[in-house]
Length: 118
Image (cartoon, rainbow, N blue to C red; front, side, top):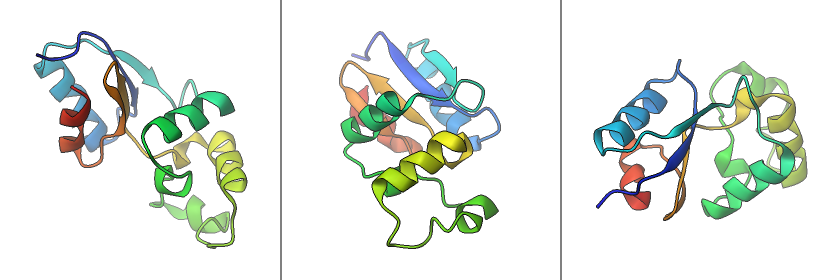
C-alpha cells in the first residue's frame, strides 16, 4: 500500500521531476509540492535531506549546465561545505527531484527510485 503523504522538491521544467510527480499521484498520493527554485531550502533542511537520502553533497549536486563548471565545482578538492554553500546560493545546483515520505528520502533519479519510499 502506498504511503499517504509525501513531499517532492519539484522543478516543473524538469521532465524527470514531472514524471515522479505524476507517479506519486498515480499511486494515490497528493504530495506537498515544493518548487525549490522559488522556495529554496535552508542549510539544515538541505543537509538533512541529503543525509537521509544516503548521499554526499557532491552526489546531490546537479552537474549539468554551465554554472557547475563556472563555479569550479567540478574540482574534486571542493569540500562538502563549499558545495552546500554553492547549492544554497544557486538552488539550480540541487539535483531533483527529492521525495520524502514516512519510509524515507530518495533522490528519484532515475524515477524508478520512487518505489523505494512508496
